[in-house]
Length: 247
Image (cartoon, rainbow, N blue to C red; front, side, top):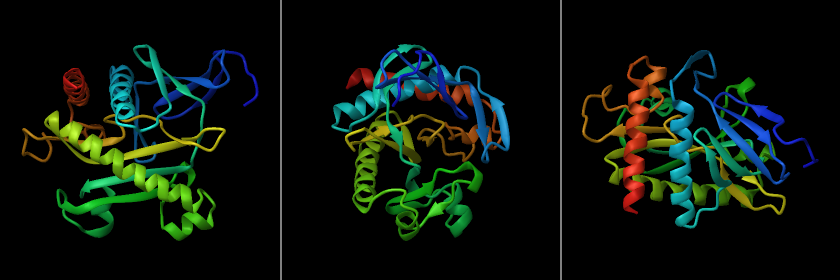
């Protein structure tokens, strides 16, 4: 990476802005309150989302690091900012599903809430213009988005992370329905877990609720106009913080 002035905006996405720092190997991620859904066709704002997602991601990255998962996380210098290792993001969204919801139900007819016999790992092409399409393994390799060894590693890591997060959220009284992961390459080829882990990237259901709408604790509240979005995110944060203290 060529040297650039500290504080220069490198990239702005739907939920975060990436800035340079005085160290070319370290970037600053600023989490935004902006909210989007349906490939940015729906836009809005969730008050305090940036700070809450930054805090949740910080604690989950730290917890995963403690369990042997290598991540890009370094530290959290302010409420809505995270310092991370500079990586080249692999253009794949790795989705892990434990319970049928969202596009899995829409595309297969499987009933919402069906517990899958085993976790399902799917790969989506990270490309807004194409609508982030689901890829078959052969298409993924045909497009040279990752090597066979990298694909195998991503699947193994996704399942390992799923086991850790499922157990953690279960102790929070939350069911981890499904979630999206992104990974990045270090200059030496090492793959690190990157991006964020938050109610923006996970489907989370409150185990104390049985009503299909009331149990939702993630961005589906925004997608489906269920209301009380900020309260749901805040409740996830409070439970994550409380459980992190006990670890």
